[in-house]
Image 1: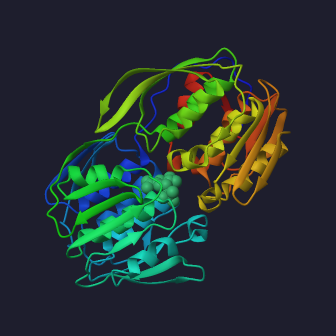
Image 2: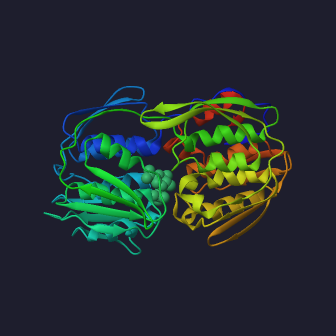
Image 3: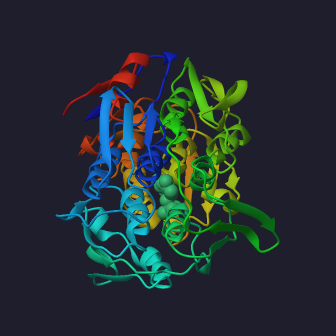
Length: 439
Ligand code: S3P
């Protein structure tokens, strides 16, 4: 797909449902008694793969209309053994949360995924799960395909996270649901808290103590989860693409309704404002249990590069690729430190952005844990390159956004991964005035 310099972007960008909350609504629904109703579900491939997996473990998952789904759950500890391999496609969240969910049931399941997911480390999840007695047999380096043998009669564990990861935290909590006694997870750096919020909503006894050690999350095992109605809010990580496009395309003025202001998700928006972005946060309110605001975003020709505080990383971990595009159109350098987790996402995102932006004429510095972008000012990026997307939706969308403001068009070698998280990206962006063409 190729993106060329667009006229001003105008109009309303209504982005799809949140990916993290969509996965969780299906998984928690499957572990509950009764019928969970979900509206606004993201129908991206990642979430569809989780829906298929929940069916394989015994839940009845039904689509009633666009975004309108129901899940008839089997209850905590009642997953059945799947008759076939569970293919989670491109989704790290899907596979890691589902591994946690079955880890304390006396069943065995084999997991696989696409070429991107098969490269990603699963040891970060299977090591803490081993403390429950769960066994996992994967390829070298803890890679998929992997067979997980659930523990019988597991007891709760106390675990301090080694990496700031909501996926690992959630996998342990989900395993703790079918363990006796308390499971305690301690996270030094707060990560997205959707599992904690939603588990309480589904009736689990879960508390979060904010201590000097970090967040201490305590879950009582073997609750009876009750089916809920979940209204999935829009995805702030998807909203980031039209928002950042409007900031760099001259004359733009767009409205983006219902963007999460959850403090564990809004790091990008804080960073953009610090850079001098013109974003108005209107009508703050609650939607689907999340704090949200409507955003009015205007072209911002005076953005300056900044040093992004490393402790902000967990709240904007998926947004560094698009931030590095905005940084290319700012004046001065933007320094992103403490970002080595980006190397184990759907692709090595530091490498993918560095190589692609360099090909577009931007000066980049990088090391294992750092990405530095030397901004070229508004309209300064030459472009005229093809970026490799490495089966990574966010890399594809980031370069297509860059092409809307660069001097020459920018192409991506494969736009198909966009369907994992933002299936309406092309129509939504062209509706605002972007020029995207196949080939
Ligand atoms: C997610 C957690 C994050 C994030 C991913 C979604 C989740 O991953 O990058 O897109 O829904 O829990 P990590 O837990 O690996 O940081």
